[in-house]
Image 1 (cartoon, rainbow, N blue to C red):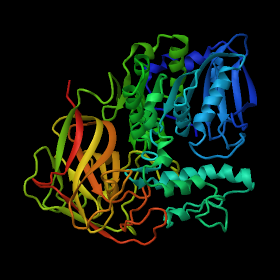
Image 2 (spheres, rainbow, N blue to C red; image 1 turned 60 degrees about the vertical axis):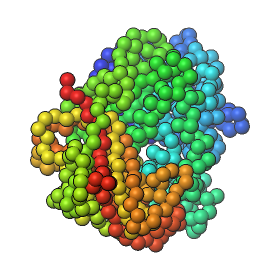
Image 3 (tube, helix red, strand yellow; image 1 turned 135 degrees about the vertical axis):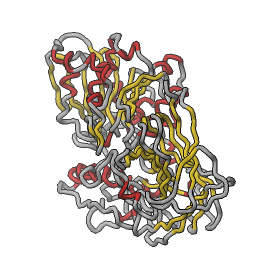
Length: 587
């Protein structure tokens, strides 16, 4: 899919549509141009290029979402680039079998070198695109194609286990099922030339029975499934060699080209996008590669575009298309144009609440002060009407909070970083009061703030927990409560208790024993305005974004039976559960 990210940086508009309107080149288009991969498989691309003599830099996109109908090719070619849009292996016009990630390094290397060899190429190749198209860039870059000179991955992951298929050990059910359902359409048309029988089966158990298969085919038979990789993902819940071989995080030191990384606060791949930027800088093999990294964080990503994302209007400065950044980025890299990328700082972020853009030296912000908000209550923090509070003072002797998590009645997903079916489950910032009214959701809030408080950077929660089950989940959500009561979700996370120590080696709990868990809530940039309330929600489910933990400790793929779990959160002098946020000092 082409990801439209309207919230982008106004100062980047200096090379935008107005420049394209006066671009001098007429455009010629070649359709279904063949490129032979090293194993003989033919991939096909559409090529948009200036109708002029000479050689031009190449901008390459490798996509599973259909190369046809791409208007960026026309704009890029008119601006003096050869734009190549290629269907990846096994998708649409290209030959071969489709399997996510598996062939993207080799095919990416071969395609980059093929593109560099074209008679109208000046041998400089840059890549661009979002979501899985970001993965095709990262996986190509780790293979070191000699003529790859830059990438522009937006809203994409750094690890296809944690942050794509799983998070904190929990299965990303909504994304995994909706994304594979969409991809299965083309797979089925390529094989039996009729519509897929895939359904919206989020309540289906076991998960391996999700209806993405030919009618009558057993769910365990991956050889004839429309999406065999879905079964493979379920078969590898741990971070093992299946995932490590194509994890970007394992190969940061292999990526030595300049990168414009684009992330988004409400995007499903926010955590991975931020890790990509940090990892590429920290593991760069040269100073040039380190200084070539740029980060832009917008608002919506997969959650939407425009000034209004979800239920929140972020103001007029939030409007710009991410495609408006690609040409300035490559003008700077390939044409030595002295634009914002040449003179500005490395990082630009949109600060919500203030609803303004800001340049920064790096990410995370060095001046942000790590601040602890401890959880407090008299044991009655259930629902927004409970007595849960957040304060910078540490707890002493307090009664733990507890709730019953029933997998048959999980706390529902309301907004947040979702993909890829907004019709049935709306993403982005949404009012959380309906879920906060549930007795299985603990709510901890500060008093109304007496001044503006900006929180920008990584967010985490340390919880001391106890459960009646051998395995269960704990979820956390950071919320900005407006004076009118509107509870705006900012960022969230989850931990499956069996993965509390390692995602490689799970370990079940002993019922009744207290454990310390760490929840990664990724990051945000939000100015909590005077009179607003900073809030933390704790529960054991966020369904269907994440699969329901059935509390039995059985494998996620085939488990069907479940039990309720009585879960407790401790907050006393021996067990100081705490929310940790980075606060930016007022200027």
